[in-house]
Length: 77
Ligand SMILES: [Zn+2]
Image 1: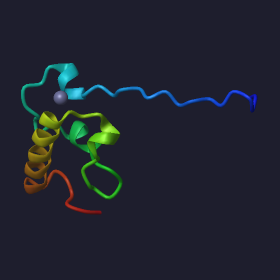
Image 2: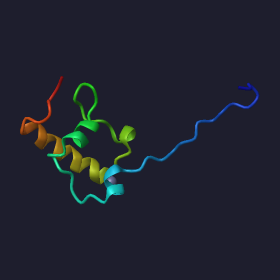
Image 3: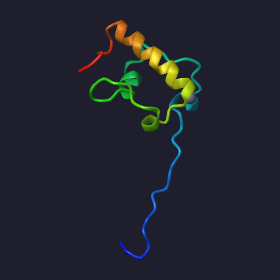
Image 4: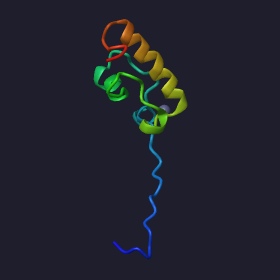
């Protein structure tokens, strides 16, 4: 790696998982999907990290809250 040409990190726009799959709503019963949007401590991962759009992030929040209420996901670790 040469020092004369510093490598710039290219910003790659993340695509919303739900938009890509054409989901009209977020299913709270989809455990692996819910789990993938939570961090180690059980908090909902930010849009910045997952690339989820605002519309689907709001739907996801509701879905995760429902899953927590049903006892499928933990409120905190
Ligand atoms: Zn989306």
